[in-house]
Length: 172
Image (cartoon, rainbow, N blue to C red; front, side):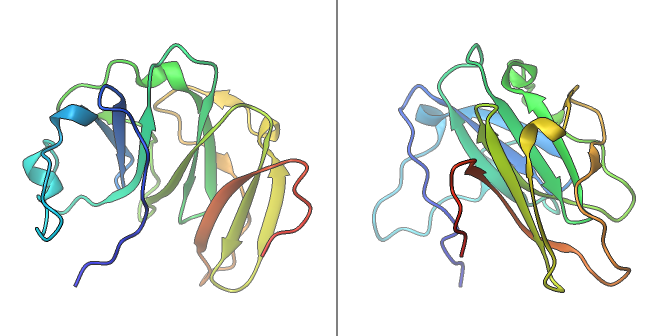
């Protein structure tokens, strides 16, 4: 009854970063993730990573090395956004690291890799959307809480976030 959410491409020696709804990040090398057959159901992520059973993975990102120039842009359901340099995640412990300090009742929903020149698009349940350049969000430390990315009404929440190239003028 599960659905496929995304397919990622990585080399066997790449690092795979798993970001959870609680604002934590876990790291595993791609070759250490067990291989499964085409018809198998797979393996529970909690048997691979040291995470709580109530914790859910919200973003999976492959990265070949942490010395590259680039950023992770994170967004929460409550409308906060944060930009962190990639090298902040070079030493993730097996028990995970805090990637984002969350407010009470908020959850980390999306994490995207950028090279510093993209736009961020956020959309809400009640049909609002915003597009802004990622450089409008200053680079922060790993445990910072982020800044407001979009103002929400009381019953509204962010339903999607993505990064796009500046020259893209049409979005569907």
